[in-house]
Length: 76
Image 1 (cartoon, helix red, strand yellow):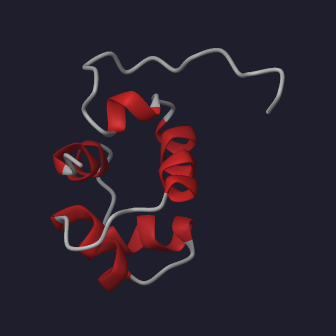
Image 2 (cartoon, rainbow, N blue to C red):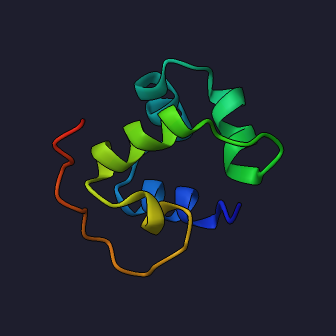
């Protein structure tokens, strides 16, 4: 997975790895491993980040350059 965007979007908002780790209820060290690609970030945590940053999952994982979110599913 291309994890470059995780760092870019965090830094664009002047947030630290510690700030995001708190949001994800993990440690700064664990979040750092997500950003550098040592560990894969679980999908549930990607969903939290997409909601937090108000972007699509496709944007976070660099499948698109379009930031906009999709309409919420009626199943969700």
